[in-house]
Length: 421
Ligand code: EPZ
Image: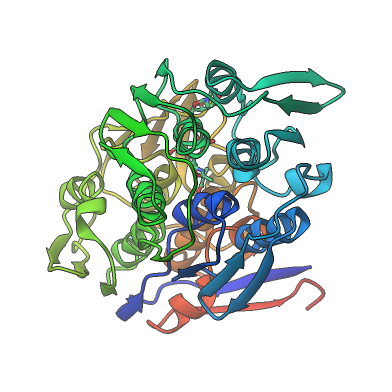
């Protein structure tokens, strides 16, 4: 077991290269199952979830090679249609393998996925959509036994909620289905458009990805191709909060600043100065942080739920009260009691959190309970007076390639040590 030891109070200053997006890399790796020749995926972040995806790909019969940020997948001999429970439980996005395996092999046997405990993570929208495309799904004893006679067939699917995962599963199942599939109320996250651009490079015919209505014209087969994963907008946002809360200034390199449009207004409201060019974003902290009138998490292009925790950590030191409304997940405030342990003043009422700015936070031993909540504790530790120790790092390592190296490179006093120390 390891922990991060953080000595707070140092303004961050310098440049950080932003890693590839976890939530783009994972569905793109799953999509390789659909291809009948090798794929080369660049800018894959070195994360536990990427490792888990590679383990699933190997289990299915793919040859997988990882060299730094490039993952080469040869899916020529995919033959296995099941994913063991232990592998399924390692992450949430294992569920998007379902659409890909079923489309490629005509059958699939998986258990329910794992991932952050952000409240119940149902997959009803995934299953209803796949059933509509012709997949027969028998649920029982924690497993899903799926098969289809012949090819899946195109349909019009209206999602009651623009679920990211369900949209990805439909894309993966529909690209080689018979006929046209139309998704209404599709998720519009940039990771959806990235998945579609990879699939189209493999020969798929997808139109409108990134918009609410997406059309997929089924093709007979997909070939492999090369792809570079988009940068991680949530990691970028996390580092923006770290600069803002420590009174520093950071240049983030390799970002797609259009993907940050939903969060930039919040940093401007907090009083930060932001400048962006094609691939870089520069943030200078406010002299004193202004409170945030109301941060409501919404599907893209609304404010991202994944940014709620780090931005809340920043707001704990604002001069006044900030309001958060978490509309996407039922249980995404597990970082709050840990922030309170550091001296933050936060009141929770259902999906609403009221953050009363305090003069200072104080270092304390805190425990990460999920990925972005853990990152928020690191951000708070950077600003706190004294030493903060963060455990539960397996959560953080699922989404941040090298959080302590990145932050130390711009002046943070942060190190990873064994918990025994
Ligand atoms: C993806 O999760 C991301 N994960 C999440 O990022 C992100 O928070 C989320 O999208 C929203 O942007 C990956 O891409 C691997 P959803 P996903 O389906 O697909 C409900 C991180 O920190 N829902 O859009 O699981 C669901 O319960 C992670 O990187 C159903 O009710 O999100 C939730 O309330 C955390 N039925 C809401 O929709 C379903 O069948 C959003 O879920 C599916 C979802």
